[in-house]
Image (cartoon, rainbow, N blue to C red; front, side, top):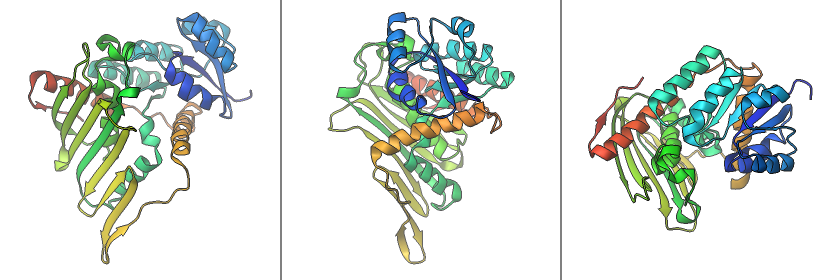
Length: 337
């Protein structure tokens, strides 16, 4: 395939199988050249399903069979650092599943390594590509909602879909419980919507520990400019569907992702300014992953200059502070960029 971006997939878990590989196989000028996983039988089965030509136990082994320009990291959280550094060692651009890693120190190492290598490290914060979330961020950045006063980010998953076993229930491999699993997404979504201002204060409460990890949490963040953020998380929702929501309160308007609605005040009163879409929810979900890959490939092709992921260091610092706050039952003061 001429001028194709050659992609290696590191980790054959559910994120690779359910989300990324079905999309990658349909993208133009992308060639999935290899699947890397220590579980050879599983990897070969998946490789056959998606017509991937090479299976290897590590990137060194794959490099002997095929070159690659980019690596998708779909490993357990604790292994992200090794995977990212290994991919950078091979000169590849990296798309890493969220969260980037499990601590601020580790996140800083990875960002500095990518910057030093001149390669794009992009974290797969897919919520940033959701239609409603992107629209809300536009209204915030344009000033149409006035001064932002409050942001609420809610990520509540039903018991039927929560991780019951495996590495997501293991603090060593996951880095925590629901705070790391869902909180990294929900906190990033809230902070990204208001352009990642400095975080001054963190207060977190957790509950419902299953083994060594928490199953529910509430987080409050105090930001520069007197903006407040509240984040609500659980794996234990007793409902017929999950609740994922972003809500922004501004001095001149509000925005809500679920159901998607944006209102603002003008001289005639309160006006509904919600951007229309004819796409159904499932199509919008798939679109978000296509757009995520389109963005990453622009970096890999050299169509966009490399962007440092320093905001993910801030996110890791906030998550560290959340765990300290919950453990010590007190507010934590932070100094973030």
